[in-house]
Image (cartoon, rainbow, N blue to C red; front, side, top):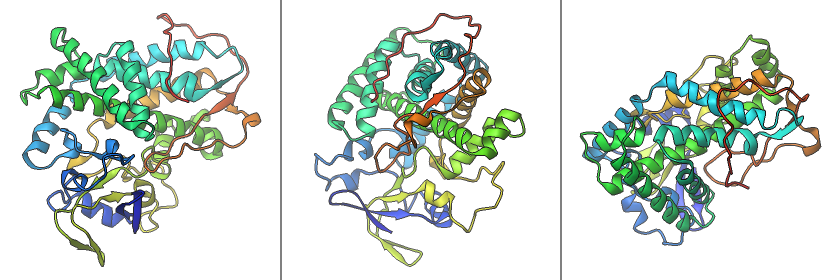
Length: 376
């Protein structure tokens, strides 16, 4: 169906599952490189900083795509998942201890954002002071608020990180990117690290929060997860099907006009896959979705997310730590129905206030970290 991504910026929205699968598996006719499209987009377009070309696999085609994809996939695959499990626990326990005796908390501000922020910083080997600047820039870009300044802030902070890792490499994604045979240049390195930050923080934040909302509001999952019949992994998959954290951000640009399902798609005009709509296509829905992972939340085809294992691990551990510590947690009735942040691409709550019986702090083997989340 025809839509506008912003005023005067036409696109086609795909809401059928089979059509989406065809497009995502055909990068020859539907490349992800936006450069031909963006030539005619005004410089002040609010969504341009989010969609414009960058030297990364997700915005490239052909030989460039292959080179970038090999570098980022190898760097992500080098992550020690066992060590990451311990990192999430080390971040989660002090955060829970900071509010468990209060009887209430805003889970986004006090738990999920700082946890995801800390985990992504650890994956990239990024000091918190650089990470704070990157997180603020990411929020500005994703929400379209002062996006141009957000891009500048992002580049400056990540260039500082790349420079640091060049001098002091460690076992982290940034260092592995620097050492990969693809020999990414400075601009390529900064953009790859920026992509890990942007998708890592925004996607993971929304995935964890949306799953907690499901567990807190749906008796099928609330009772089952807390009672042990269904796992938090099942709840995560339910959210990835019904409430994906990025609802509409698989975008391709046809090389030439092409007829798809009786509709002519113009050359170089964005074709936006609505993961949320396609996942709920009646032709592929079953009455019981438990264990079904055929959703499009991770993408599909050559551009599918290479960090699915990392995201699942962080999200599941974050949820399990919280539910184990505060099993009687409930939505705070004083705050009414949770509200969603505006935006064409993400599916994100503004806050997630909860109440619970005050609980004694957990035993922690690490000192609490001071976090400052740059979000409203």
